[in-house]
View (cartoon, rainbow, N blue to C red):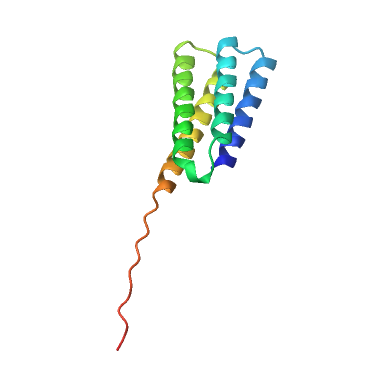
Length: 116
């Protein structure tokens, strides 16, 4: 999960750089950079024993990106940036769900009766 979070954070940083290069809306672009930093913090904090906290961190980044997406749509900012934000928000949401589900695996074993 840490590797995926790190990859998503680096991709968000690339999105931030593209937004700066293409002169996208400044406040939205810099908030994407803030989410990238948050993603880097989530990816670097904790270890495999503390996946639960990392999953909630990914959920927080997903929530922040979701708010940015809604605000970006409502204020009619650059469509390409807003929809990339939506995509990264969905990806972080999937990472968070994966981390929470992996925290409590359910293993059901059915033993067959031995033939006599």
